[in-house]
Amino acid sequence: MEDNAPLSFGQEALWLAEELVPGLSAYVMLAGWELTGPLDPQALQRALTALVDRHELLRSALVPVDGRPEQVVRGCAPFELRRVDLRDRDGQEQDKAIAGDLAGLLEKPFDLSSPPLLRGVLFRLAARRHTLVLVTHHIVWDGGSDVLLRRELSELYAAEVQGRRPELPELAVQYADFAWWQREEASPALEASVEHWAQRLRDVRAPELPTDRPRPALRRFTAAFCQIPIPAAAVRGVTELARTASVSPFVVHLAVFDVLVARWADEPRAVVGTPLSGRGEPELENLLGYFVNSVVLVADCDPGLTLSELLVAVRTDLSSAFEHGDAPFHHVVDRINPLRDSSRHPLYQVAFQYVPESEPLRLIGVDATEVSERLLHRSEVTTEFDLLAEVREEADGQHILNLRYATDLFDATTMDGVARAYVEILDAAVATPDSTLARLAEAAMSLPAAGTKPSRGPENVPHRVPSSDAAPSVAPRTELHGRIAAVWAEVLGLPEVDCAANFFAMGGSSLLGAQLVRRLSAELGLNLELIDLFDSESVDGLVEFLGRASAADWPGGFDRPDSRATPS
Image (cartoon, rainbow, N blue to C red; front, side, top):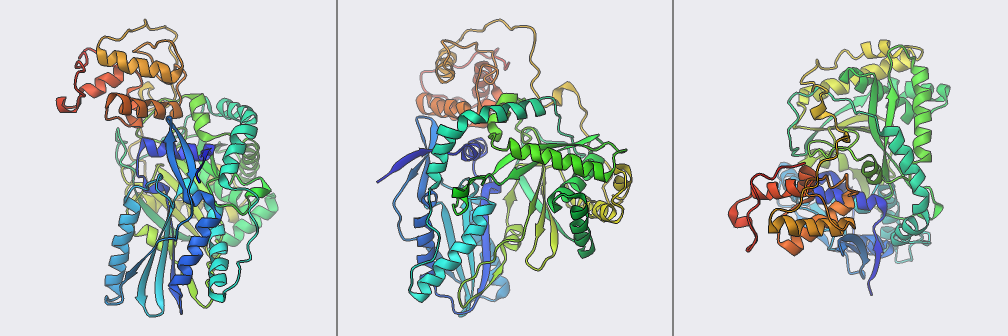
């Protein structure tokens, strides 16, 4: 039996991101452990089957129905834990084999229509030594799910080995129930939150970071990592500073990152995105799924402010973000309606998050050592941001600063300097908490010199500037124009459309754009992706884009577009 449900708003945003840039490994979640001891692979496989059976989302197909994505719950089948025997290879060859296998897992697009949406590989390295890797897509997973996975897999495996029923709390709801609740009950209340963010961010411009190379017109999203430890003395200092200032350690780290971004960009404020957990309802506590929502935080980093004043401002901004954190990020983007730019993430390009110590995996009789980060850093990965900074708390109490950065823009040496500058500012902050931001910024001795700093001309202002001059209506000029315009109007619910008018200015949204592209592809045989609509914006622009394709790509019977057609 199959049950259909809508996607949650957060899932919808990730689904649109996949439509825009299919196969981004930034959305592939990886967890890995080295297992030492008498592992029972059959019991592990049965435990994973029970996990997928317990959480319907993992055995759901995410598919478009009439142009809108839905989740379709499927029955549970035995989990396929692929096994790879590497006992005949030495250590170096085993590492190469694992890295090659993981590259295939991460680079192969995740088929969201083919559950289960969890993949597993068990590498056998010796009689009592294995490496377990689990991979899933962010659209069904978040940080809270990561914690639950370790807890539930530990108990399910123990129950299988000991021949007993697992002792796990009953699930009051499934993820589909949450998605329906969002749509039917929570949705009306979201309007106020969306409008709050639209007013808050409408005139905000994200600082342009100095880059080692000019920003390309079309990003490749290729990423690399830079990682350094945060000194233990600084970690203790953050704890004490947070206690004294009545804020969380996250607020301290975020404030220091704000100072770094403002100093590096030579701007008076920092604009940074961060995820909120989104698990406010108690029924969601034990449920795997994607609940996070991105919010945009704006920090005034006037050099004359003190660190104490900045901490209060960051805490206040975060409190407001939590209050309005239910506003779906893509709805905020649609409301603000910025210029769609295929070279950057909308509204912010720099993100920050604090990751507390993760719950360990405890497989009875087996020593499990976490190797997720090590495996991920050895893989080819992508990023949707220019820079994602992460402060991660390790099991031994050590804290790590991890930077995932766009290699289109930055060199490794630059990121090494940025990481060291963060630690320098953090050291200064905990040593002299009454310092001004100017004094803290001066501590960033390792910050690289400015590279390519874009001018802030009209051509690179990322927000749409409405024109006061109404452009004359442009009617379809060719059969292709007419057929595209007809679908365009139907998707927007309009009697007709101006072929020179902007899709988003006419009331279009990211989701409607995805529906339009799918309908044009299916009904007219056009080879289109959502990013083509974002770049073209109008019927004229889309026809001109298609005109640049080879004649062989044109569906039979259509007139070639008028070469005079221009984008709006």
